[in-house]
Image (cartoon, each protein chain N blue to C red):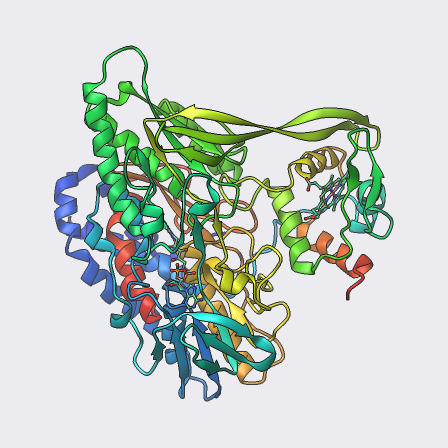
Length: 490
Length: 133
Ligand SMILES: Cc1cc2nc3c(=O)[nH]c(=O)nc-3n(C[C@H](O)[C@H](O)[C@H](O)COP(=O)(O)OP(=O)(O)OC[C@H]3O[C@@H](n4cnc5c(N)ncnc54)[C@H](O)[C@@H]3O)c2cc1C
């Protein structure tokens, strides 16, 4: 996949200067870039703008987070008579979640990622500040918690997912990332060595936690190291890289404080690799080794005792059974046992699932996620229902980067359906991007898709950690998302 | 310095521009050619544990577990997800799968030269065996 020829020269300049420049100079300069970036975004896509369609129909979008709001904005640009309603209960729904990692690592302040829903409702779009509790696709309507019935011709499901802290024994609460309604989780998470960047308040607390760990390490005597654990659950999660990113950042902060040798950092994922794409898996393993990280595969956090500071993992493995003459391989049996581990600091990535309003409704599925045709994003059963973002059942995905590809596909397909076309013209190819923060100042830009191969947008080895991607992550991606995507331009 | 920042912006813009230009392309799995077709792979391998009609093999092995679950009631999207999951060893970076045993079986099947395309195998199973169609 090569589509970078257009601007090779500029890129070369960029790469050349990467090493010459003092980082501080660059940072100072980049501080003015968001505005410029936003302007640039506007100009690049204006050229590709298609003529608006006259198709008519009432579109209802459930969920006004990144996916829902960007989709609403793009519809207003693609339809000459848009009739669009967004239903979203959370006043901070468009907050910049990818920034939570940087907040957790002490790079950004909590306030840097807060954005208000009401400032981003595209003009002409109706906002209903409520939550959908009933999906009734047979009758083409949804019902809100307040009892309002909303009818539609086309329904877009963009509810994202929920963080299921309650699934871990000892914790409570099923919440979203941006909402303030998170007291149940905060009873145990965000203090006493237990942290989680997956919700905004939790991210701010994580930075306090890392500083506490540093203080503890400075005071620490004796040969035994302090134990810092980083978990990764068995469910699909949004931003598959974040559980590792926060580990890299904690490492960098400990090193910066000169106490890295006092703390052992261990990654405990349910799965048995670092990444589904082999090239990235290999690169990450090397990065782990260089930093002296430990890792224990096939460990799934199932419980925690915050008083005694013990975390319980379900450790699982395959045990050899009988010889299978057809497979020419031993049959395997699944075994598991619970393992207790002491911690001084633990970063929890909670299990994630579809909100129950979707999962238990006719548009949901056995596993909860919204079942769509993975290329067209059309519901498998209800042809006037589409979905995108973290809620859909497609391989990989669940990043803002995937949403950036999906929302254009979805809008093109819905407009085509509204125009009465039989064939849906656009197809999603599984693109996902994970800017894997590997240090304070380095990022590996892991781009991939359903081919399960690296799909770099730039002519650079994608398995390398680079300062330039750190600049992209910390300076350019937020304005691109907030001003570019939420207005349907990027 | 000015040049650098402009370049970064250009790079960002380029990233976004790419986003526009290839959003309507479907990317299939790598154009690999497989030695056997789906029917051959199924009849040689999968059949032993998932049955002639995809009905599953309830016969218990020594550990008292059925050899393999039914595949003939699954929706096409479920089959595609499960088969992709099995082949990739998980859909998410380090989450793993619910299919540890089948992952192991897949590796053995691949070693025997009977690899297959995930989407087309799912379609084959669905079109040939599904009883709810
Ligand atoms: C710590 C962290 C780091 C991340 N890092 C990255 C990264 O580096 N790169 C990247 O690309 N992505 C990253 N992401 C992922 C990215 O933020 C999400 O993939 C993206 O926000 C998905 O958009 P969405 O609209 O599907 O879901 P959301 O943005 O979560 O929005 C869903 C909305 O639906 C609303 N809703 C839910 N149920 C209902 C209902 N019943 N009725 C009405 N409304 C409802 C919710 O209130 C919410 O506002 C990260 C996320 C986190 C948490």
